[in-house]
Amino acid sequence: IMSDNNQDVTIGNQQESLHFKIGYILGIIDGEGHLGLRSYRQKSGVVNYSPILQVECVDEKIVNTFARYMKDLGLPVYICKLKPRNGWDGTLRFLLKGMKRMKPVLDLLLKYPFAKRERAKVLKEFINLRKLGIKNSKYGYSEKDLKTKITEFNRKRKAESSETIRLTG
Image (tube, rainbow, N blue to C red; front, top):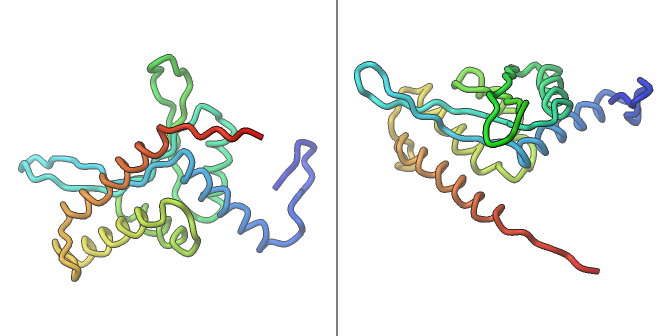
């Protein structure tokens, strides 16, 4: 990790730097990220789902650091600038979608504790089912059931994050 005057401020070894980068990535995903399934309709009318990781932030430095750490870990990176909306100008989006891109990300993330771990497990199960060509898991979940589980996680999170907790001293 580099300070403002370009000095390495990690305690000294590559393992610590690696853990710092992973911790940063997990923190951004927990705070600003979205793990989910995006639905899309094929020409035949069949609805399919694709796993996604999305991070939106107006602070370029945060998104660029996130992307750089992902790249340093050998993970795919894609950033785009969103059109201005609702008074926000310059929002950046880091977006990964698809099973091939998401599998190595989930493999890495699931080695560590983080708040969205249960969501990541569901996405990993979804990818494993699709790779095997199975529409139902051994636990009885279908693709649609897994989509419903992810949606429930997201609804619960919105309800929890809409409350403000104030500590007074």
